[in-house]
Length: 358
Image 1 (cartoon, helix red, strand yellow):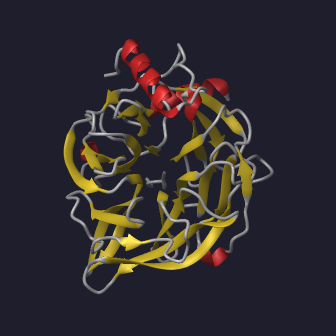
Image 2 (cartoon, rainbow, N blue to C red):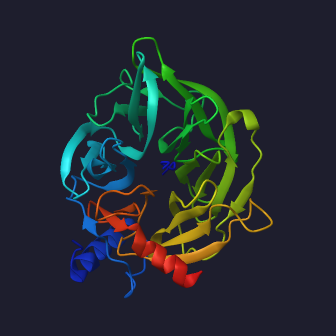
């Protein structure tokens, strides 16, 4: 899931029970147990109603220690849950029809007011749903239809791209299945004249292997790239700006995954440096790749480290480099886990593993 923001762990027996139940439910026999040396989260959130899938982090510019995590509850009677940095539920939107992934953007002009908002895919209605942050008021006039011209709908992945040149905001949307070319649709988001958001289709792009599905999408706003996980195949890279064309720039993360490529998040260490983290879902690890590429090729993203986590079968994640109070002074990594929860990790713990392995 995610664009860059500039700038109580359960007992092991509990994890084992959750792991076993989910494996039986999904039939995924490749799921491995948590590694003995797996990182422990600093915070495990309160449980939601049905099934966590994807989080995003909203940075409170007035007080970063009051920032929020917003995550999906994926069900036919699902919703969006809002957590504080202590993992407590502080707000929610319910009654959504299988919300899948979620992302956020800052400063969309609505009625002359700069508005922060989250967007989630509502799979059973084939719409995007948009809510103002932090109060979670709907701003979409009931939802924005997507994939209208295709029989293959069922939106799943979502990432929001803010173009640096003019601050125009786009939604890049994936779906359960689609064609070999033009799998992703990109919509320009703007005020419809009534202080609600409308979406206008601006392009169709993106290769698809046909092996499974494309769910996780992440945008690097500063560098202008979009990445997406082609499950069991690899991670694709394109320009996020539709004006720059539909050429595939890179395909990486082809090896080391025991099954699905899932959540993508990007940690920034400088204007053009940092890490791309990709969930190795059934192995309960995150693969860490170079954001800037190799020394002689910006489109070559070498593997730097593999980070074992206590998170079980993670679909979605987000990360920020912004200091979020004393507990997360170098930022925070958030990942969905089985058990209807999200895990918060202190970035310093992840950085130590990267430094040791790289």
